[in-house]
Length: 227
Length: 272
Image (tube, rainbow over all chains, first blue to last red; front, side, top):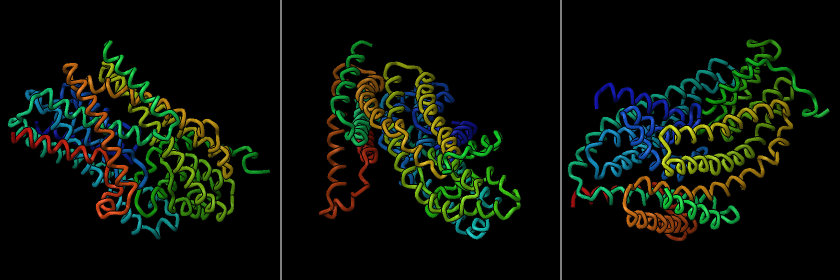
């Protein structure tokens, strides 16, 4: 991967990471979007979509509730989509390692967002008197500072993630010893379990949840047979 | 006359547009002390310029200071607060009344938004996109389905919230009781439950690209895995008797467990 590729993808990761909380929270940061865009940039949007959809199954378990700590999927989606599209010569383990790399980046991304929130608090505390006196410049300045800090957080995370994980992934894939189909099935089963567990957690209180889920499942199985 | 029966004063279109775009960045200075408070001041600020004395007047500075204090709400529904607070400030409501109103608004806006958007509408949009993906949708079709569906709701809610807040002012609580907002969550929950069932086999089938036997095994693995995850999480969250349960409290999430499982699988695949 060239330096130019890393710079462009890091900028993309920064912009999508910014969407997670700071601006505009339009869910451009969801992995099904971010990984697909990254895959398209690497020349294979379908590969990006495949890893993005797998990550989306995990992402439904992690919702951005207020002050809670949650994974940052913007940068993670970019890294997952890029690694999967780039490792085209390895069939076995390609999806497993790309998904695992993206999950780890999402985890670190969640931690990095907490650090930006602490930085914002430090800035707000230092300017408390100015805000309390109704200073327009301070109120706007705090908002812009937070925006810029979050953007740089996403850029740095994406750049470091790509630079570090791309060679690690290749080293792992060169030694991969499990069958390609089984490797994919393992990821799909784990992702499906997480997604279904999340659906139960979110909707089990909805009257008739079990029947509605079973109705959907039956419809899905019928479509699989037909398609 | 009550606040809601008085016609709202005119707010120029450019001011409304400015407030709307600022609302998209309402959380950019989010922190653990004032939460989204600074963001509320940032969003209301264009309207406050219309107070007597303008940008350099005492009324402007007092109002901006008041609006930039601690506030907490769901980010999309802060639009309700922004509209209502802008109206209250321009109507010249007493500062104590505005402060009480701000405090009272936090809980309902947070609870409604979390329940309706994060816990229902966002997963519904994710499962819809996964159904499109599983049915063989192209990258463009899948991504556009997700983004268009989600943002019709997202942007629509922000616009509605700003208008409702501005129209009703301090009486905006009536708008939060709107039947559509109250009834939407259970109805959307039913649709999301069906979609979650529909998405699972379709998405798995497209991800594994393999034989019927492996598809069946993977689907059963996912169903069994979900039951195990739910039991483990339930045990960690429901019991506080042992040290292990206390340590796991709030930390056990399906996606975190899956990181461990995939790491073990990668190690096995490399070392075998």
